[in-house]
Length: 334
Length: 245
Image 1 (cartoon, rainbow over the protein chains, first blue to last red):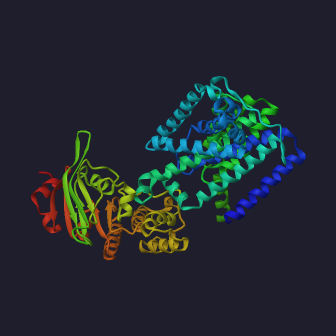
Image 2: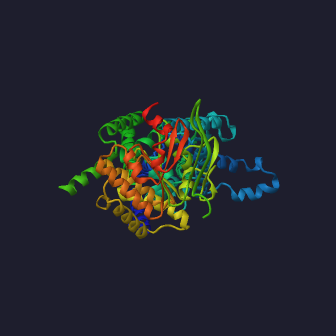
Image 3: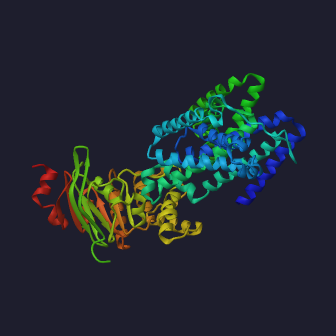
């Protein structure tokens, strides 16, 4: 299937989902759906570096929070225009701020992508568990910086008050939901394009054998930097609307362990070899978590993830997609 | 091109206190078939790794096709025409046999010609190379499904896909049967007849002698002999290194 057709199918599916929620659901459906879609973006982003290149990133929460705090920063700038800028500039700034959400997403992606690139430079000579620990450390360092940065709320957190309604969409959550659908389309399209391109071959060689990749002329370091940048940018984009979704951000929520764990578990359970895996894993796990939240308790979420992850690592290390591929191969042989 | 294709000059490499290479010098002319032998731990693979950029030499220099290679990383050297096969085959396990060949075409050849290699071109070239090593019938298979000798052939075909000027075959015959060794030697000679300069690193003397036009011997990181194979194996130092004093 060609890329325009793939995008068109996604747009139709996204539109159908939106209309379905709008017709049958209520605001809670949009809240819950937003979280699941956010995990689709996070899982797909993680998979670009972790699944395609084989570099396990434990710092997803850090990139996600960077996007979130970029929004908080610009929100606070908007709130404090009169204090922050001289009178001569304040008028212009009032025209610019508050920044529209799509622009905040782009800026959040840019900032997180830049940090991804920097992380790549600093850590990509590390491999395996050392790289994973370094990314975890990055998240801790970023969290410490945010805790000590008073302008974005520091340890006590920051309130972000989204508009109650927005033209065309109505409630703001419906607008955020629609934006998240667009981010899902963007991330899945990027992942699929990578998978089918020269870049995808390069990433796969890095995952399989870096020494052999170099001997084949693959510029492994450059490709790893591309992967960390794209992956980080998408995570940042997923995080940018978060303060407007939740209304109050503090380091404990933005840097929550559940983002790092889910970003890893969802592609692992879905399957890391293709773009479909993270999608399946995120929809399955994300939905399960939402159901568990309303039927049992939100505290049971990570337990579900943990148990499923252990089960899949033991029974089906290639995830659901891997199981399906084995089944299809057997079927074609029979 | 004036001068040798490869010139290794006073190359030195240490691992901590261990001297792996001690001022090794080696020149290889274009179109030549050179055998490089030496006991285990003599520095053969370290020399290959330094030439190909996998390891960085501390002293000396590597000049390839008139260009200094020092400071260039492995993939940049491959793109300049310096290819290698590995002692232990290192296929890309998540890819098919054909896709393994496709990687150097997409990266090395494309970089050299300055534009992307189309899918059709890449497919044709993959099949051509797989036919050359008699693996065309296994193009869609996973490298896991290959035998040991087929794996070695895949390794050579992948190195060939980079369209090298110089191919370094690092123990391509280790663990193979008599007939399989013959098979690989014939293949390497055929590649050489296509204009590719080849350095063969090998322990199997029968193969080395039938392949090499020139033979160099490394012992304890030093080159102790270099010349015609028949002359080299008669040298006292070489006999001593191989058979003991």
